[in-house]
Amino acid sequence: MSDINSSVSHNAAEFSRHNDDVFGRIATRYDKLCDVFSCGIHRLWKQRVAKQIAKEKWDTLLDGATGTGDIILRVLDTISIKQRTIIASDVSLKMLAIAKHRLGRYHENVNLKQLDAESMSSIASNSIDAYSISLGLKICNRRLALLEAMRVLKPNGRIIILEASNIRWPLLHKAYLKYMSICMPVLGWLATGGDASAYKYLLQGILDFPTAEELAHELANYGFEDIKFERLSLGIVAIHTARKPNS
View (cartoon, rainbow, N blue to C red):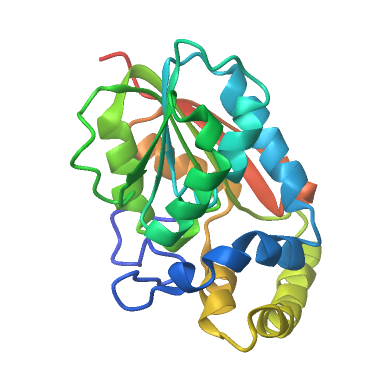
């Protein structure tokens, strides 16, 4: 099990936005890449996490790594947005530009902000009812991101995470990772016209991300309570939920 105090990197993808603006380059193709890499299954994952976000009790939701706004759109299809506020954030301005276009009709209730999930200084402590991050934790320092989530959440606030996980049967999980290691570079190269970094970080993040149990352990060590997780597609991804303590 992962030791959160060890010197091991907490950035599974070993990605630094300061060194490579890969998500800015692929912003217009990002949704297509998600379809290619997951054979379209990501749509089911996003629908499931959107339903989970929607059923949580919140007036203010902060969505980290919101990308092109795909999940927020699904949340908005599920809830009544009246008297609620969503902060849709991403570190990439080009991603946010696409999200702004897609979420434009909800501009009165959805605020788009450029935020780094590792350091959200413009968000006050204890000010957010619910925090969600989907398929973005693997490409940032998750220790910093989870500590920031804890900081901005109100007491009893909820965190909802959709992220890469592990298939419980080791041989099947090993076969899946082997398949991804072979197919993702080929599909990514074709879909991006040869932009290798567009899939390199995602693949690395999948290979080195903690198991569902390990991520639950990390959440507990950072102070979260009532931690639960649900594996989807045998465990290719998992949804984790947890609560910030009341005091």
